[in-house]
Image (cartoon, rainbow, N blue to C red):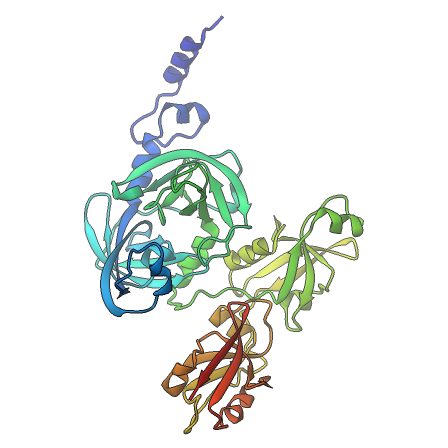
Length: 460
């Protein structure tokens, strides 16, 4: 009978591991993560971003009671603040992927490699909703880079390492497993994403760092933790590598905005009650509750009430998962959609397209000696919705695309959806200029801002 210590010794002798070998099996992994770290860590960098922040000084600053009543008052003074995060080299010529929130509004970006070399960097492409940014290191070449893995192949229980610079203490590695996939009910920052969940510790400063598998392949970009106490509770989230790959490809191709395929659908996740009503054995998929006339799903034969089950063989159990799949695949690709139509399984092919700029946006600017001079407006269509990040449920109306000159004093902001001016409804961009002509002293403007109704009142 072989006792436990003898078994460990036998495994060690039977599976010699050189310093340059990446572990490929469970016994090898049990010996050390060092070869994986040695392979992956040189491609993980520290990012130092300088941001100019406007601070208002008031005599009540820091007062626990009065400060809340004097926000926005006092002299505005610019201050420099430094943001710290991590990034991952994904191309030998110095292309680095990180989080949007690490470099947002940065005026200067410095990147330090694991070997302590430093480079200046500039942003090639950034997207707040995806919480991704791609940087180019200036003058870099022949750098270590991480290969990206197909994140759709990940399974719960796989061993992973999180590499980054937590708390600014220097490059650090933590280990764990994939503890969940398809976490799509989270709202992290401005993002409405689809995340890999891990119990590898992710702390402040880890944002933008690498989540790698035991082969040293990048499976995700670490982005956030879920915590009640301010520290790591063992639940971290990473952006899947498939979305990172498409984002990186667009950045290298010279895109200035992240281009997402347009679905043209409104859907909701199937629940047990809906599944029972539809005669299904279990809840699965996304029920289509509305379809735009030009939706590629409608062109493929789907109708309201159908249930989208999978795209290219990958299950879709939430609207966020549908949008993630589309964003990771990219515009122009032909994909297979599997769905239920009146309870019967069907398949169809559809082409992923950009949001159409129809009906025409008919953008107009208010001119002349009127109170709203300098106000620019446009008709809401899918392209305008995508460009201005409007709520997906808003499909028609008039949106403010710019505010300057006299209109800047009205309180209107870019992205406001105009509902009425002085009680008169706004339905088309052409309605705005005539409604701006009256000379009354009291004005009221009804808008939707961030999905909430707001009444702006002022006197001239």
